[in-house]
Image (cartoon, rainbow over all chains, first blue to last red; front, side):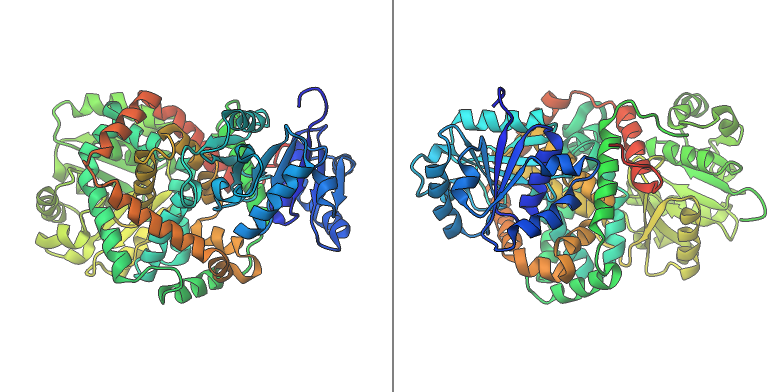
Amino acid sequence: MADKPTSIAIVGAGTIGLSFAALHLAKSPECLVSIFDTRSDLRNYVHASLPGYLTDVDVAQCLARLKITTSLEDAVKDADVVQEQGPENLDFKQKIWPKIEAAASKDALFWSSTSGILASEQSQHMHDRSRLIVVHPYNPPHVMPLLEVVPSPSTTQDVVDRTLTFWQSLGRVPVLIRKECTGFVANRLAFALFREACSLVAQGVVSVEDLDSVVQSSMGPRWTVAGPFKSYHAGGGEGGLQSFMDKIGVTVQACWTASDDDVKKHDVRVDADWQREVCRQTKEVYGVVEVSERDRKTRRVLEAVQDGTLPTRP
Amino acid sequence: MADKPTSIAIVGAGTIGLSFAALHLAKSPECLVSIFDTRSDLRNYVHASLPGYLTDVDVAQCLARLKITTSLEDAVKDADVVQEQGPENLDFKQKIWPKIEAAASKDALFWSSTSGILASEQSQHMHDRSRLIVVHPYNPPHVMPLLEVVPSPSTTQDVVDRTLTFWQSLGRVPVLIRKECTGFVANRLAFALFREACSLVAQGVVSVEDLDSVVQSSMGPRWTVAGPFKSYHAGGGEGGLQSFMDKIGVTVQACWTASDDDVKKHDVRVDADWQREVCRQTKEVYGVVEVSERDRKTRRVLEAVQDGTLPTRP
């Protein structure tokens, strides 16, 4: 892929597809992107929507490297990478990969952006199942650095390596997930905290807005700088995480036990009674969220943590 | 407290005590701080340690407003606020509050920095139990904006209001916790995610270092800008959180169920077998963490999200 401009086929022009297209066009000044979707207004839709994802770059120069097509074969035939974000539906994915495989070059990387349908399931009808790998973004991928790279047991090490190298060279954060599992890692972690958040609001311990304030003024900034293991390891001083657990393990276990009890007591399952009030309160507090403002602030936060040269203002 | 400089008594000169002392001295250019502890080398210890917490301020000017004393009465007698961070030990706290109450002025606010011993328990032997309130920081308080304000059922609304107003006027983020509960809110949330993190590492799904990378490049920055409710509410588009749950509730529940199953299967309780390997891996990856670098970066992140005027660099 080093000798000529990289060519990337985006299969599925939803918000994730457009966000990835924008990321590639903006981050790699020479790469070519083709976008495939079956929607009849595809060209107008992409030209209307894509510029919104292209911030701080020459939009016309980006669009000049873009092909828009309703032919899957046309989209993938010259691609070095085929990146799929069609419907989250096993049948769709099992049917499209053999078509992509038949039309694409034999060296092309095959990436699914799925948030939960394993590569080992998606690849069932492929000729060569070793080519498929999940590359799950954190939404929206043109802003957020994380990509969860999840091979199936059949995926070759070469595919894993080339996938990790691609994203590292773009300055993103690809993370290898070593075993296929329900929900991968980021959502598993986020939903664990979210369940506790729902439970505490459902119990009336804290309001929706105050709970968000808690996270924004504590874990959010802390975990931007150091993840949970590094944070608690630091919290243990010289003895590290082991000291931390020795010192406050009793409190940690008390919290875990209380969480389990409360989740049961307040029936914190999806679609149970608590959900209506939590959704109502959230809507009342936030109305419709302005995501462009969120994304702008997120970029600033990411710059702040990455750039070692910025001085702290007094 | 408005007519003369605010006077704050810090009871217990551990790391939290010094961090709070530094916060008050640095944030309120006129306030007076007295530090009480029973350690025999108190004066030398405070003079050696406190400057490390005083960044971007005139250290000599701060120290000139500091009193260091091994007499509890001397520390609290003129205080507008008495802030306790002694040992996390119910007996200690139950015994010290009546002494503080006897020595302090009748209007002084009484705050405990405890991470888990409820005000309703601590205040058992006080003459007036309505004065005590928990003000639990996120460590270290001279950096992190959050204060969890947790009244007991006896605490007066006046004490709650004055406490919230104090911290708001300092530009911090005091959050009212409406019911006393195990671990309050921040630790409950953080430990819920931490349990899931431990579970996923114990299963070999992801390494300690990679798990931290996941959090630092996704939830950390996202939740710095918008807490979990606001984030998922945005994720649901115009229909908000309710739409989000309608669309991906099945995935959320699948993750919750998988988490519960895995925690049981891998026996993820404090001090069980998984803990040794997770602690070993953490130590191997991180050694001893440089917290001053962490705190410097955290300040930059907090500035980036707070300051609406900073442009995003291209």
